[in-house]
Length: 131
Image 1 (cartoon, helix red, strand yellow):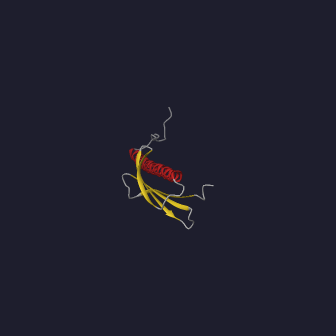
Image 2 (cartoon, one colour):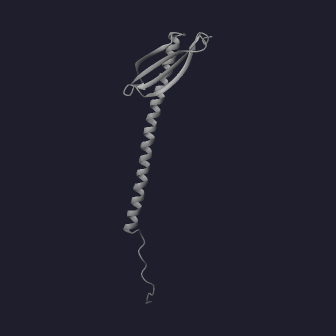
């Protein structure tokens, strides 16, 4: 038999320290992904709320135009249940330099925070715009 002069080959694999470091890196990456997902969820909810409030503002302007093509200047407000939520709306009708045209400013807020508008939308109505 031939005598071996080579030392025994070392076993290959990861040490416990390398495994722990890899787990820490993986945990940090997963935490960052979870935080990003949570931020995206919050942003989506805010975008949904602004979209619904915008639709409601357009409805208020359209209903005002249909009810009276030349409404009197002044303010009005109310509550509306829309898309399963309670909203507060405020309509400000202003005269313009053209006597037959009115400016309509609508502010939409949630019923829970009526002092903070979610959406503000302006439109115009008048007898000259009906042709």
